[in-house]
Image (tube, rainbow over the protein chains, first blue to last red):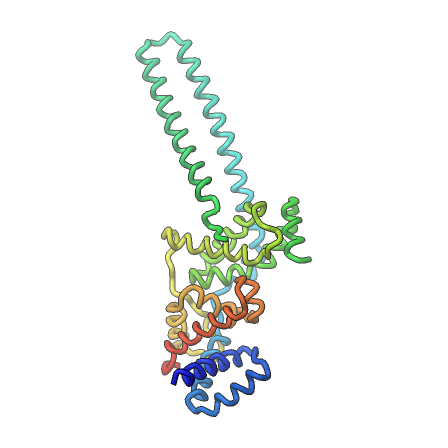
Length: 151
Length: 167
């Protein structure tokens, strides 16, 4: 009984393989024998119908215009990403430069000590927030940079 | 020119070589992404993102290994990651009606395809919709031909079970 089931699965595999035109001469011979069984012959008809439908089917594909612009879209995205990186790095450096400048000016000014302290604390708070955000971003980049690449 | 030569040129900063590899694989990338997400816009976006990621990570790529399976893995991982993070909403696959298929069969087929798992749908797309041979599919997915046959077998068996008596 087990032997018979195995043969049936083998026949079914060959039926499918025949639809892809990938049968060897020996397999063709084996399939011919399989098809003496009316059940398997019917199976072949059903698979043929399914494959016929699949081969007639098309999925939604972009029109030529999209394909023609495909490369330039990638190029523009890459260019913009590089632009963002450069802007961000230079922006951060400039920001820290101005913060230091402001610190120096405040310390050298004649305003009340309590006001100096509040302004310095405020600027310090902003600096800590900025450093924290940058550190978190760097941590995520370092930890998850290759998360999408499973080898 | 084979992929290895092209990759070397891209690493040397040759923009035209990158354009060449993009144009060589853009339709395949779209097809695989579409088989996962079922949306034209998302599939285009994911495929483009995959090329950008490839460009940025090319230094890490082992030149001794084939390029295409590495690229396909990146592409699939981007799609799966977006789905996992809920950045994109999975929509049922839409097949474009073709000569000889009526609306009812089209709907049944869409439903059946939606019920296949990602690997099964992918193999059906590559074999039937894109017309790749067993050997070509094996190369694209970096799997043995036996696995291609077996995946196709179970995918079509599942389709048969769902479509039997309805078509």
